[in-house]
Length: 573
Image 1: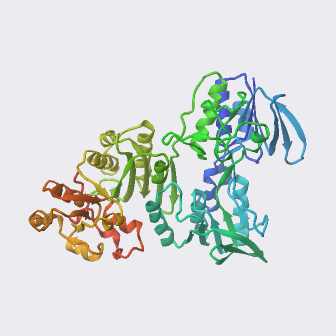
Image 2: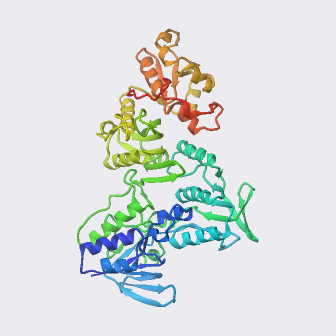
Image 3: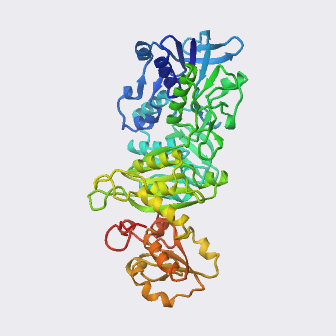
C-alpha cells in the first residue's frame, strides 16, 4: 500500500509516524511545500521575541530523521498542485526548480493547513508587512527586526497570534499598537472576561484600538501609514497581519471533493472526504464541536495531531471515529495566563443552551497561608437543568493552566456540577487548597441548581426592577472606597440585627467583594422571608471588568480581601 500525505507539521507528520508504527510495509511519501516538514509553529512568536533563541529548537523532525528512523520519504519545498482522482495520482511541483512530476497513491491524506487572511492594500506585498505562519515567516521577521531595529509596530488582529506578537515585539523594545475590528480581544472569551485582558495590555503599554478596522496600508519611503476606518492614521516601521486564517482547501475544491462550513474540507467521522480513498485532517477540515453539536473549524495543534493519528489507524485497518473537539486553548500574555474550553456565552446562546454561569473572582492558586499564592478569575458555564459543565474561562497566573485542564476534562467527560464539587484532587499547601477552586465552582453551581441562591449579573437587572434595593454587605471601610450608586451599606456581621429595618415587599440585590459574603447574606435574608439575589462575581469582578465605570474608584483593588476579615476566606459556599 502506498500512502501520499500532503503537508507535514502537526496532522501530516503525526499521521505518517503513526502509520509507520502500525504498518512496516507501507510506502509513505510526505510532501511539504515549506522547507520544514515538522516544526513547532506555536513557538514562532517566541522565536521572534527572543525567548527561543536557537533556530534548530523549532524543528521537530527533518526529512533525514524521518527517513532514518521511520523509513518515510519526506520531501520539502515541493507543492502538490492537483489531484487526479480517477488515475489516483497527484501532480507535484518542485518549487526550487519548477520541475513537475506525478506521484501515484492508494490512499491520499490532505493536511494543507490554513493560510493567513491578507487583504489587498495599497502597499501590496511589502517587506515591512508580515504574517506569521511558517518557520520561514519567523526567520524573515526576526531578521528584519535585528537588521533594522524598528521602533513602532502595528499588529492587525487581537487573536492568539496578535496578542502573542504584541508581547514579543515589546520584548524587542518596540512601541506596539493593536488594531482589532471587534470590540474585544480574543473571541473565545466573553466580553466581561476580555476586559481583564484589555487592562493588562494597557498596563504594559500596548495601545489598543478596538472596534476599529484597517482600511488601507500605504508605503512612504521606509515608513508605513495605516489608515483606519475612524479616519485616524497610524505610522509604523512594521506591520504584522494577524487578522485570522482561512482553510487552504483549494486542492480539495479543484478535485471536486465536498466542502463544509467556511470553505473547509468536509469529512466523515473516520476523517474520510467524499472520496473514500482521500482523507483530510488539521486546520483545513470541518469538525464537529463536541459541546454545541455545531459543524465548525477548530484550527488548533491538539486536534490536528489526534486527527492525523486517527487517519493512520483507519488506513491500517483499525476502524476508529473522531468524536470532535471542544476548542480548549491557552495563551501566555506577559505574566497572565488566559485559557478557555467549551462554550462561552455567545456560543451557548447560538446552541440554544439553557445555562447559567458562576464567577470566582479571587480563586487562589494554592493555600493562601503558604507564600506566593496568586489570584485567578474563573468563569464556568453550566446547563441549568442537568448541571452539566458546558465551558469555562480562566485568567490568572500560576495554577490557571491546571484548573483549566481539569475543567476541560470535565466538559469532555460530561461531568455535572455535583461531580465537579466531588472531584478528588491533590492537595498540599504549595499546590492547592483543601477545597480547590474547581470544587468551589461545583459547590456554587449546586447551590444555584438547588435553589439556595439566585444571581444577578449586571446593573441593568435591578434598574429594571421597580422594587429593587441595592444592598452592600461589605465593611464601611470597603464601602467608602467605591460602591454602586444608590446602594445601602449593612455589613454582613450586623445584618441579623437590622432585619427589622428591611421591607419584605422589596427585592434585595446584594453584593460584596467576591460574592461570598453576599451569598451568606442571601441565605440569611431568604430564610427570613425576603427576596434576594447575589451579585455574580461580586464588586471585585465588577471593578475588573468595568475599569472605566463610574463606581470604580478604588486605587489598589488587590488590597481588598475576600471576606473583609484581613485575609482570604476559605469558608465553603
